[in-house]
Image 1 (cartoon, rainbow, N blue to C red):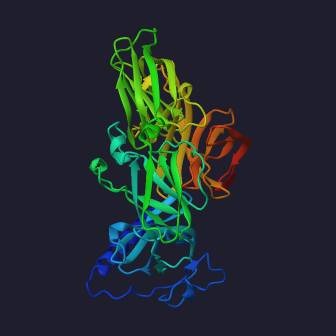
Image 2 (cartoon, rainbow, N blue to C red):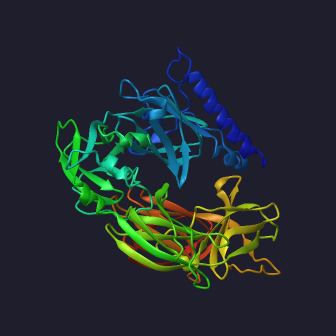
Image 3 (tube, one colour):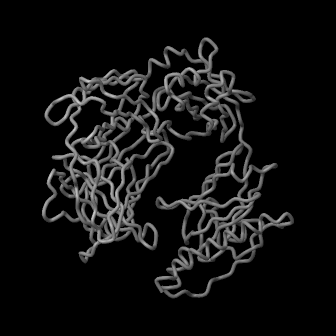
Length: 536
C-alpha cells in the first residue's frame, strides 16, 4: 500500500492536465458540476449548495478505512471559474494558490478557469492576485470529495500610473541605476500615513503589503528610460488612502491619494535620496594577521546584486552606495574559508568593520543516520556560530548533500570555527513525512578518526502566527535545551505567519522585534502533533 500516495498524486496531476486540455476547447461550456462539499469559511452557516451558483448536489462519501483515508487526504482537486470582470486577466496575469501550514498548492489557470491539485480535507487559505484586480483572500474548507468547486469573483482595482522624478525633473530610478542600484524603489499603499522607516529587510524591497500592489517592469533596461513610468499602483480599496515611496525599507516620501485621482507622482531630491546610502570600510587579514589582497567582498540582498569590491595589497576595501537594510556579507579568497554573515546597515551609515579574519580552509565531514543508525541521503546547510548574532537569519545560500550512506563533506568551512549543521530529508508524505536533525560541529585541519553523526528524527510542524495585522517585523530564534540556536524565522509585514519543522523535544523560543530587541524568552515543548505559537 506504500505506492498508493504516489498513485494518488499522479491521478491528481492527470486530472489537472485533462482539465486544462478540456478548458482549451474553443467550444468548452462551463466546468461540469461535481460533488459539492466546499463551504466558504467566511460565510457562516452556508451550505455546500450555496457556496457556488453552479455547484451540483451534495453527496456523502462512503466510509473510508484508514488506508483509503490516508490516500484521500492528498487527492482533492479544487476547480472553478474566474468571474466578475470583463475582459478577464490573461492566464499568466493570475497568481492563484492555496496555502496551509507553510505548504503551497499553486493553480493551473486556463481561459478563466482554474484547478488546484494535491489538496487535503480541512481549512485552506486561498489567495488570488490578478493584474488589474483587487487582491482576493479567503478561507475555504474542503471535505473528502475528490473533486470540489468554488467560483471566484474578481473586482476591478483602482489603477494609478506611477512617476518618480527628482527635483530637476530627472527620473529617480535612472539616476540610482548609475550607482548600481537597479531596483529597490517601491510604492506601498496604506490606510494610515506612514511616518517613519519600516524594519530592515533582507529582500530588495519590503514586498506587497498594505492595501495595494506596485507593479513594475521586469525589464531592468526600462529603468534607464528617462521618460519611462515607474509602474502602476493597484488599490484594493477606493481612495482616500496613503501612498509611500520606499528605498528598500527607507521612507523617501508620502502623499494622500484622493478619490478620482488619475496618476501618482513623487518628486524627490536626488541628493537627499543618495544620502540614505551607506558606506562600509574593512581590512581583510588571515589567521596570522597578515593582509589578504584581492579578497572578494560582497554585500547583497536575498535577491542578489548589491555592492562588491576587491581588497588592495594592504587588505583594505571600501564599499560605497550600499543600500541600507539587512545585507548578506560574504568574503572569500584563495585557500581560505567562505566567510558568510549578515550586517544590518542604518540609512546614511558609515561604519568601519576593522579587521575581518579569514581562517584557513578546512574540512568538515560527518555522517547522517536515522534512528536505527542507518545512513541517510539528505540535504544540509551550515552556519558559522561565531559569525552569527541574533536575530539574523541562518545561512541558507549554500547547500551540500549526504550520499546514499549518509556521508557528507561541507565546503568553505574555516579551521577552528564551530558550525550549526542542519540536515533534512523530504518524506513520502510531504512535510508530514519530513525528517530533520541538528548538530553543532567543529571544523579542523585534520578530520577526526570517527566522523560525527547527525541523527534524523520525524519532524513536527511549529506554526508561528502574528496575532494582529500591521507593519511590524518579528524574528523568532529557536534554541535547543542548551540554548544553542537551531532555527531562525523572520516574519515580515507581507506574510504574518511562518513555520518550522522540529523533532520532538524541549526547546527555547526567543522573539525579537524588527530592531533586534528581544521581546520574550520562553520554553517550548514540541510533541508529535502540530503546535501553534502566537506572536509576539
